[in-house]
Each structure stands twice: as C-alpha cells, then as structure tokens.
Image (cartoon, rainbow, N blue to C red; front, side, top):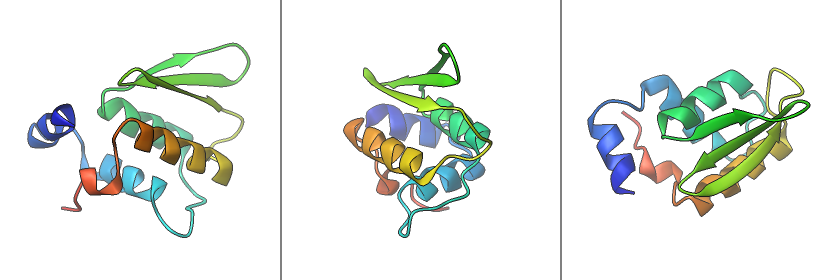
Length: 100
C-alpha cells in the first residue's frame, strides 16, 4: 500500500490509468475496457507483464500472478471480474485511487 501512495504522490498513476482502475471495480461491470489500456494501468502500479505461449499474458504484482487471454481488443466481463479479484488480493481497491 505504501508503494501505491508513493506512486500516487509521484504522479505515476495518470488520470487515464486511474479511470481504467476504477472501471475494474465499477458496478455494473464495465464491458469496454481496452486490453492495452488495462495493461498500461497495471504496469503503472508496478506490475510486470509477460507474454506467454498462445495469446496468454501473465501479470505479476506484489507476488500475486494473474493470467489473461489476449483474444480481443477489449477485456471480457469475466476477465474484468478476474482482474478485480486479483487486484483485491494485491490489496488494491478503487479507494486506493481517489478520483481527482
């Protein structure tokens, strides 16, 4: 959590990335999160993204790993729920990034 606050204070979590992060926690579930925007927002948090075989991408943050299928330009609703739960397991919530 300290790393998140440090990144926030340093301005490393940009406004667009903050909107994407909030979209992961939106109700109802967002259906239009671009894969590359999501990847950029997660990297902004300090995540490491690694291409795997096929269309799989492994994302690691705070020792927690998540695997996504890059099968389209936008994330599926199932992918969004998966990322939301993974972010929560990393200690990240929408409240971690107050809207500016």
